[in-house]
Length: 460
Image (cartoon, rainbow, N blue to C red; front, side):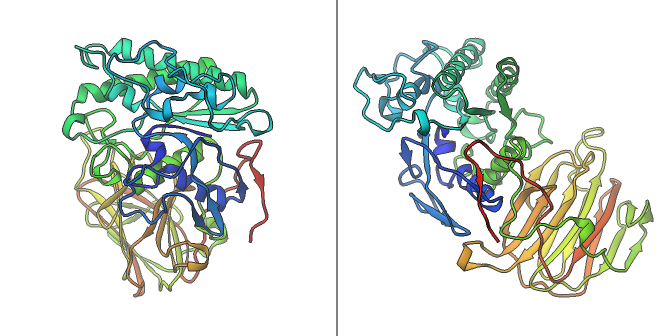
């Protein structure tokens, strides 16, 4: 059961739930979505290929069911446990209902009406509940005559009271359910959301949420890893290319990162894009290297300074795999260096660049993190499209087992020289791990059981 607001409901993008469906499918985990609503926010799906109701991925149907609503608030879901409902707000979302109605604990809605919607109890009770709520409570529901910044402590306290009540309801109605709560995700510094003090309030709420959850033994997931600009001096500043035009709702890339963070935290396994898994050690070692200026730093490892490069004899076909581990610069120590980048050029396909604070494909950010401290391999694969399984072709990129680039546009690979080069003044380290010039493989990861209802099913 997904519980949340428009970020879960889906506005302009299909929401992170669609990406999680792909994760479950790739890892052969069967599940059933429970919810009072289906589909995405009507009229707001933009150019997404996902239908507003159901969709298929690799032969598995995404039912698109959830307990989320655009503009939703935690006080509505809880039944206003905090008493913090602003005076001008009526129970507009979720058709005036709350989680006690959905889980069979109360027949009266927030409006005092008789509840007549779906009820999930007994054998139909959720085995896992994923909650993402609070953006609207903090961004839009400040008390009358005041501001969030001026009234921050009370606003945060009220939101935590409502979240606590939501969790208490779940534990009473479905005591065996596993519960996770996502932090409030980043948004971009734009328009009415450009106030750094408001962003700071959200950061503070996330900190207090983690402390509360530790006492309650609830899993809190940092969905902002890779989504928020690590180089920004402002807290939780979103990366514009990962958000839609309103700079608040995640776009497809943002959904990919949120789902990847959830899957990692809950040990569901990473995406495979329908590929077989194979560890780097099981692939062929990269063939003959030539280094221009780079000095050896171990087996297949190099230390580079600005202008240095390493090339490998590599003739990519329609499918290929290459994996390497990079580190660049020294992070924030002397300021984030955006001019220094370790680039890997795939002949005829494009270029991946690794900066101190970003990973980019052809200039577009895929992930933000301190790459001076990186210890995870990057894997790049090219694979043709598979219409029969609804898996689009293109470049796929993983950081560790987390997919950070999906079906990125590419020309047909061509050429025989895979090259790594460093521009700028920062130092970089590069460990070339493995490659396969004619096959694509996903990283080797063994997924853990997702939930009591996640029953593996046989897949090829």
